[in-house]
Amino acid sequence: MRILFVHQNFPGQYPHVARALKARGHDVAALTIAGNKRAELVTTHRYAYKPAPSPERLPLASHYAEHVHRAEVVAAAAAAMKAKGYVPDVICGHLGWGETLFLKDVWPAARLIVYAEFFYRNDGLDVGFDPEFHQESLPSRLRVTSRQAALLLAMNSADQAQAPTRWQAESFPAELRAKIHVVHDGIDTAAIAPAASAFVSIGRDPRIKLTPGDEVLTFINRNLEPYRGYHIFMRALPEIMKRRPQARVIIVGGNDVSYGTAAPKGKSWREIFLNEVKDQLDLSRIHFVGLIPHDVFINLMQVTRVHAYLTYPFVLSWSMLEAMSAGALVIGSRTPPVEEAISHGVNGQLVDFFDVQAWTESVVAALAQPDRARDLRRAARQTIIAQYDLQSICLPSQIRMIEGA
Image (tube, rainbow, N blue to C red; front, side, top):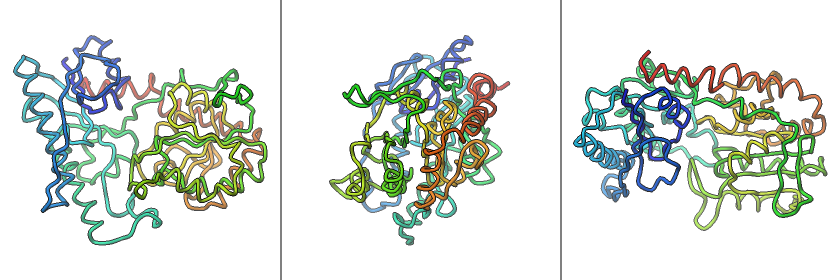
């Protein structure tokens, strides 16, 4: 079969399945944006894209217009491929940027499978969850509703869809869910496993070498921002560090925004919430390490005594599942995406997202009594092996879906 992956950040969610399909003898290719600097796993075609000016008279249409503009550019690139004789049997693409909208117009006979990551709603999900950063108003509701347009068009044109978790699939309207297969991208549990020999060096000081058994608390986001609970974590830190005077805190993440609103101009959320509590902290024991390579992240999860993971009702991070696979004790927010993977007292712990005092008590207790978490750590890894394992569960399911078996 000819299988085409369309993703502006390829491989994105597709690295494992793209390699596997190529190994099975399929003709696998990718179509991605010209500026994508990631390694080419398969034959790669590119499209040049520059955002178009937003429609001044219709600001609510700007999100849809952006998706349609990108879709038009992608369709032109696809048509150029078709003119050279390329006709795929299956197209897999993320629906989040509009890339898939017109692909069936270029290749009507191809089977289109979209990655259905999340559907925007005004009620019951991320919007309005955190009143500190959201003021309910008619304009805000209209903005969210307008963002649904491109997603609905993408789902309408698709033959099938893939969602990584049940909860994310259920964010989509009920009438569309029959198209959606719940198949996670997969966690490589063979590579991401507990390791007694793991270590992490912090900065240039050779004395700061952390190993399993050390009192380490970790917090990891792609970017440090409210959507992933950075503000709650920072507000819990002063008391945690006061009561655990030997603990080191490793905070991983960039200073930009992945989700939600940007910080006030000239500032970052990292700076804002650090400044809120820094006078109460021993800054010599807090290490902001920015973005780190994936292998270093895995070492950190093999070392950490407690890993705190918070999220709004939104897309579940790979990092939480990988932490569980590495045998970390995850204390997670009691929000639906987390609750799908973690059961309190069974394979981790859950705390109300907003309850700073409860976060303090849970983290302090776990740092103080690591032996009590051994069963939780083992159970966490078994959960990932049983439900999210790449080789035995997720990859075979993805291949069956794409091959149409």
